[in-house]
Image (cartoon, rainbow, N blue to C red):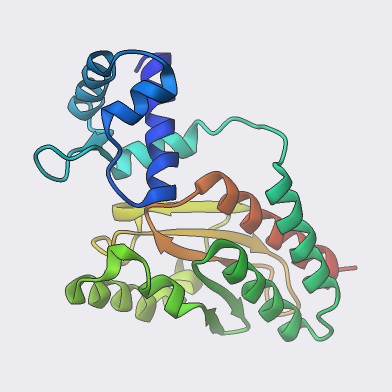
Length: 234
């Protein structure tokens, strides 16, 4: 992939996350100040390589799981935006004022729900606390009843999978079909491992559609894990 193709792919991922509709060549041409023909040629190559696809004839392009994975793997380390800083301050404040460990963890999850508009989750002992189901099922990806059923099946199996698999990275990102459960649910699971009074492998994170503002959400989830560990192990 060329540098320009990588930049176009990143722009498609970010634009699609914002507007939830396929991204057309005319918009990208304006963004990059080149001709629509040039953008169409680059999009055709990205599609050939499997990073984007065209949901139907005459539509713009949408990232594939492979495209999202490339984007996530190549996110550059940049300074936090003002919005990210506000979100992190809100998380820290809610965590530091939480009181008992269970309430502290629940506060962190509820704050992630408010900030990311996804479903938030955390392990508290042997239980999985979830909040924000209406956010998840309110996303345009899940209008179809069969798709909702796939997501519900993923949620039913999430707690036992976390307990058995015990992901060991400080931040883990499972995109679409990468999910070991609910492969066809078209969801992304972003979780942070942290130490708590309940376990050295407690987890907090979000579940949402693959159409995500990954940079912002990953930063917030990672910060939530660090903040919880700092407060619960002061």
